[in-house]
Image 1 (cartoon, one colour):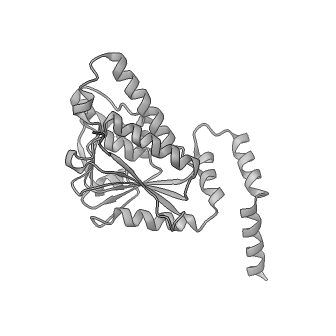
Image 2 (spheres, rainbow, N blue to C red):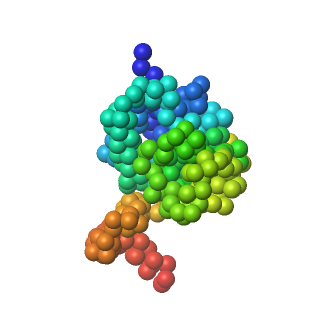
Image 3 (tube, rainbow, N blue to C red):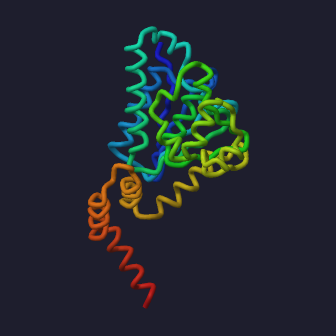
Length: 251
């Protein structure tokens, strides 16, 4: 029997946000290869019809995500199968990060290993006061395998990334905020509602500008790319409407 690991929730009365929810609290919301396929399908749906924002959250209070499902991963008994899984996760998290929407991770409980990599694939991270973050892969004789090392460096700097990865130590919510691993810490149990509030603020802005912000911040964006994006928005309906409203207020 197939197990549901990821649930896509999209309120019928709202185009502002959708929620990707990990729903295996009995195993720490660990993600198997089948679960990764479910997440990929959900990301494809959101890419085809993007809301203003996406929340990545999880069921349960103890774990956000315990990483890859080790019971499933034990079947990776040769180099080729391990390589294939790693490349597939690189692609999946890259597509999650590239969604033309603000992607906010709501972390409650422990984010461990791949769970932290899932969080790093999001644009912003909000942690409940009970949250912890750890990347203990080195203690298991491996490294980050889902493609998020550049995003970790982007968040905390290379020196901190080296220290966190080589020690594999657990970081509490307050230290995670100080390091830049998370953007904000809220009361335990309130991370998801804080993410919804943030997305509501974004939804009130120009929808076309949301995806454009992510494009201009991409490391691959050239000067010409940024100029093209700016020019397209300048002559677009959202900018014209905002400019007209500003003129009316200024009179």
